[in-house]
Image (cartoon, rainbow, N blue to C red; front, side, top):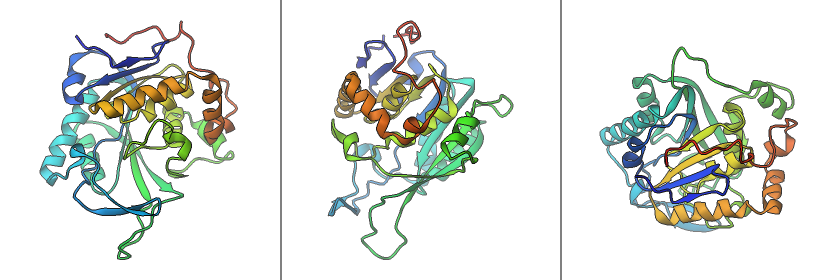
Amino acid sequence: MITPYYKSPNHDFNLLCGDTFELLPQFNFKFDMIFADPPYFLSNDGISYQAGKIVSVNKGDWDRGKSPEEMNEYNKRWIGLCREKLKENGTIWICGNYHNIFSVANSLTELGFKILNVVTWAKTNPPPNISCRYFTYSTEFIIWARKSVKTPHYFNYELMKQLNDDKQMTDVWRLPAIAPWEKSCGKHPTQKPLALLTRIILASTERNAWILDPFAGSSTTGIAANLIGRRFLGIERESDFAEMSRKRRIEIENTHTYANYRLKIKDIAKSKVSELTLFASEDETVMDLPF
């Protein structure tokens, strides 16, 4: 029997603390969308530059480097487990950089997914390259793929066009890294900005959709989902990050904080659609999860 680490009052935010590889096989539920920010395997005792200081790139044992063969095996295993949790018309988004994204793409293809786009997130405020021997690293990649080659997926084309000043949105997104106000409950070392997750969720889901994040971290996916009326299940191995997730979700129970966050996220503030209403009502969020 799975015991949730935390459930929000209206059950639109659900968090499990444990290993994705152990927990995913233990329940049967199909999600509309999956977002995953898996380990990039970058923690190899290098250094970087952050907030005016030289810092270690090490993030934790979960991010320790692997051989190419080990990385391929790891990616294929977790993506395979996630595939079983997707609806037939569901889609998956996976973050990466040049260290892991090619392995991710190969795993998706081998498992039968159809890759739809590779979005380039061009950061407007990247840290400098302190070695001065390479171009500054300023991008990450997000693969968007659907489960079935033949089953159509959902894409909110009109909204994406509206948010891009009535022009087709391209696969290059110029968005900043996380802002100070997103760190009010602490900072995860690989935390993604709410602006990025909000756009992903708006683009590929409808209101009340169920979203899974198998590497939840501080649950930016869940916070973004709840800000725009979607439902969330996150799995996080580290108890400290699970607790950070819980605090972040409790924080937006405050209606002033909730409204302030929505105003700060450009795609929400700019949107004209009526779907972006306060959470989802209790009758819309009947607990479908088997725990």
